[in-house]
Image 1 (spheres, rainbow, N blue to C red):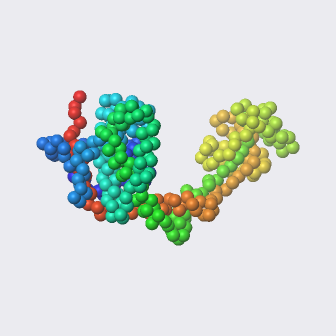
Image 2: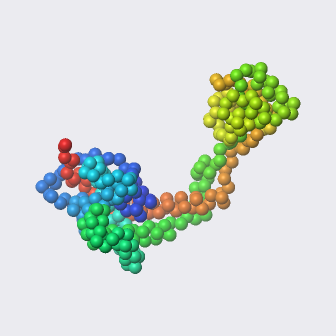
Image 3: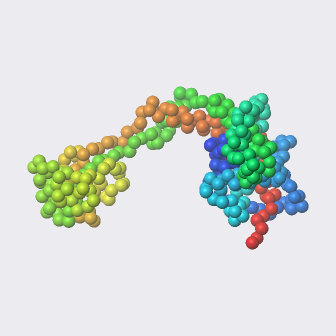
Amino acid sequence: MNKHRDRPLARAGLLALLVAFLTVVPAFAQGPATTADDADPVLIRLGGTVERLSDVAWRFEVAMRSFASGQGLPYTEDIAASLRSLLPEYIEQRSTELVLLREAERRGLTPDEESVQATLERLRSSVAPEEYDDALAGAGFPSEAELVTLIRESDLIGQVITAIEGESQPTEEQLRVRYLADIAMYTEPETFCARHILVADEALAQEIIDKVNAGEDFAELAGVHGTDGTARTGGDLGCFQRGMMIEPFEDAVVAATVGSVTGPVETQFGYHAVLVYDHRPAAAVPFEDVRDYVAESVAADNAYAVIDGLIRVSGVVTYPERLAPPTAE
């Protein structure tokens, strides 16, 4: 038996209902079936509501077929068997859906039948009428009734999440506190932009440096003397951050004066004449420039906390151990 504790909730996966979480969940170690004599064991209990294996199985089938299709895989017996290990995790996902559906009921929410019917008609029109039943079966639905059930549940869960998000908008103080707490995320790193001319001889490198100091163009000299691929672009290495260049070269770049040639710098590749043409110190992006992103992040965390709280107090229990163990091949 598994009471819900610190179970991760995929925020985007809730609206997707059946598929998104499957790409990241690990295989679940299955224990022995505790109700082997029960052909249709209860797998989820939420108050007086229970869902048995038969309730979960077709939903899981739909999810697995959708997942395989999204990965461009044919839904073969081998693929189905390999995805079977995800069923315990799917039970957890389904239990979250049940909690949210109960919250929708508590709030007096009802499916938007106009939207439900529009979705259903769109799906019907996506295939020829004579192929519709086969398409349903191929997607894992026992009948259209189950499809309608999923559409309605998706609509209700979407309404609940939208309502919770609307109630979870952060205050200005929360936004500024989060911005400061995550300031490293909003800080652009120190950046250097440089050209170099790589040659094999130290004396030649010094001669090039002297010519630049005498007024000759660095880029033109790079085209004449450079021995690496940057010679074609005037020795331009572009812009880079600390840790991206080998140590002797980086040390020279960091110590250099912007606009002045420096060197010769010896590395394992040879000797370099170096010209740093831009240096941008680390700087935090202003709060107002990232305010919307911070607000979205804080609101999502607030909504996540509400949903997690609903699950914790719901008393929902799952029984993955009641699944039959995999059949040995």
